[in-house]
Image 1 (cartoon, rainbow, N blue to C red):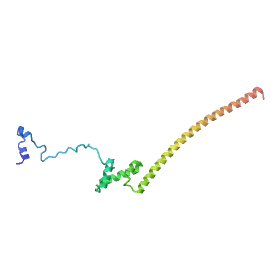
Image 2 (image 1 turned 120 degrees about the vertical axis):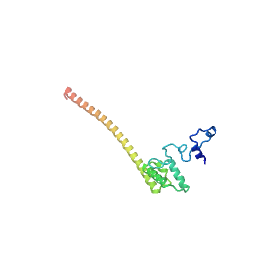
Image 3 (image 1 turned 135 degrees about the vertical axis):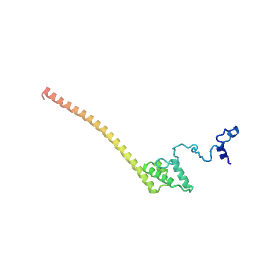
Image 4 (image 1 turned 90 degrees about the vertical axis):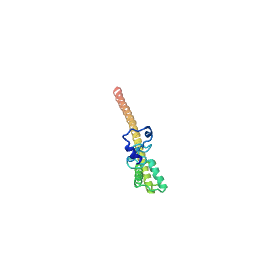
Amino acid sequence: MNQFENFYENLNTPLSNEQTTYLPCVLASELYHHGILGQKWGVRRYQNKDGSLTEKGRKRYVKMRSQGKKLTEEDAEAYKKSMVKALKSGNAKEIKKFKYDLDRPEIEEAINRINTYVKLEDTERWQTSGLRKLERATKSLNIINDATSAGLTTYDNYKKIRKILFKE
């Protein structure tokens, strides 16, 4: 008779002090799992919810590739997703993280896209500042026009009054 069978037989009988010092914590038919120490529930270390890799995931991927280890298809797919996401974002810092895995045409295309965004922003800034300057100039010209009109009207009235008074 082993210790577990003996434990089950004596389950209903009161235990002595000697028996309470040693009781099997887990019965042979039960399995307990309380998670991994330090791991938070729902926190992903290597993948975002959309499947793209986090910073740690990219580092892990590069490290595993440099060591010649085979990656699972899921890891490779997640890495590709995060690389495509970075390329589409137009963010130079994100693209730089994948510089060793991108082909030259892909890098040039990303650089062209970034340059296009920069030119577009510069053009928009230039147009906005140009419109502001044009509005200021228009206001100034309107003020000058009003002052000139008032001056000419005053001069014409002066001529008319002089003509009437002095009968010239």
